[in-house]
Image 1 (cartoon, helix red, strand yellow):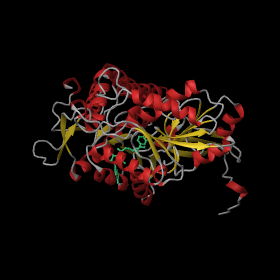
Image 2: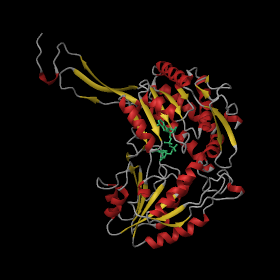
Image 3: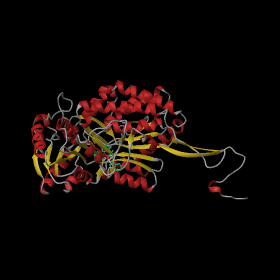
Length: 506
Ligand code: NAD
């Protein structure tokens, strides 16, 4: 990984500050979940490091907000091109550090490139509306101004793409960013920081526009409580989101929360199983079940239940599980031992509640799987109301749930969880599809027809309702959260008519 500049990993790079360094005793060694090899060691930031990074970001904001938005877009265009140059190396590092298969690692970097392109176009479209004033010779309009320093807290499973969804939009909006990647996957963050620092240098721009800070929950909590950070965008578990949301709310800041999902696919009696099955299997076992949009529940009409179950039980024994960088692998490892324990305890708990384990659930052994993080994806027959089914287990467990009667019964089950991220229906029946998409249909931020729950295009606003946190990022008009809206009224008359016809003679 020399070409990514992470060979000097003892001094994790941050805004040109070589913090930590040789004297820092608080380091973290990162092992690949694929083969247990040490990839690198990072110095964890101290409270003083945090202060220095915030000061740097605040200082850079004073310059960055004066750069015209389309010129900010030009910098993002250059970042996109640099990412193109490093796509293979960075994609490989994503795969090796996180454990997702190479194609997904490359796909993640492609998403970064795509959001750069999107943000470049957006940099010329940060427009507000004009309104008709109720007073003569007055003009009213609204404009969007840069907000300030944006804190980005990201999760391990999309170690770099989530940062870019936030940072590239924030950048064209004129904000500076402080990124705290997951402590489980900091090296991809260091690599990205090296890539973009060259772009800033080439353009004589302050390095504090994009900042990286390596730390754990403590540094994230500092950011959440910090009034100098007007927006905190946090991606991760609902447990984390509740804490961050509360801390940001207590100081009346803005938060953008992208939290856990408990996503379901509905298969009606009118489903085309030829397209449904690949969507289900990819959603349930892809990224080893470690996507926020992974398919956790399959809600199946009773008329096709046995057929679907039999077909899945034929597919699962042949899933290629192995090293994520190896050709042909479709299922890599879980991120760490804690995650394996979570997988095992969820399976034990659901069986205690009455669930029936149909296949999978083993931890693989042998030389190829020496890390102890490779598992066989599980299928469990269950009831929607089981406590285990109501929770998100971040591992490859697919719950089969039967429904009878109309599609509304399936929709009730689909909505009958605390989370509201992604949902999908497979049907060729127009009434069923439209009911699912209607006001009485899916209550999720994402609702798909004849496509699975997993994966999303960057052009749409991404996020979910209920305990998923309500935030939206990436495409559509998600940019608005990174700016402050100002309403302006201008009087070009010779009098001062007050609003609502009020007379105030002085
Ligand atoms: P996590 O909640 O353990 O950690 C996520 C990030 O939050 C890390 O950077 C961590 O250091 C930080 N953090 C933890 N506690 C904190 C606190 N009290 N204050 C501030 N920061 C804190 O999540 P994870 O295990 O890395 O990721 C898996 C979870 O992320 C799953 O629940 C998944 O569904 C969710 N996720 C959601 C989305 C989405 O867009 N909705 C995307 C990816 C992942």
